[in-house]
Length: 137
Image (cartoon, rainbow, N blue to C red; front, side):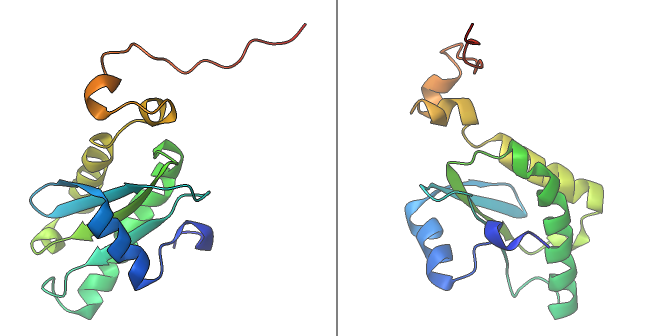
């Protein structure tokens, strides 16, 4: 389970991400994300009722949580996220599910690009690399 501070819980929080955010989709997994000022950022998991029965949906939610938890440090802290599981994802092996999640996260803006306010289109062309500040002597 994700730590409480990282969880989106309320329906209005999910709806805000759906309506105001951007999205990335594969055949069976969607990722919605929206810029936030909250710290720490929040993550939600939504699984369609068309996916299996309640036992299968809960198992899938546990698997997604298990995959997402170690990826939290790599995720951009300036966005809230909602992972949306679609029908057909219940047939995925754990490794396939992990690969889908990693690909979806890779498509969102990077931390460096959002930290300086760049769009996705210009982020790759700047050569910007985050460097630590120089040490004081």
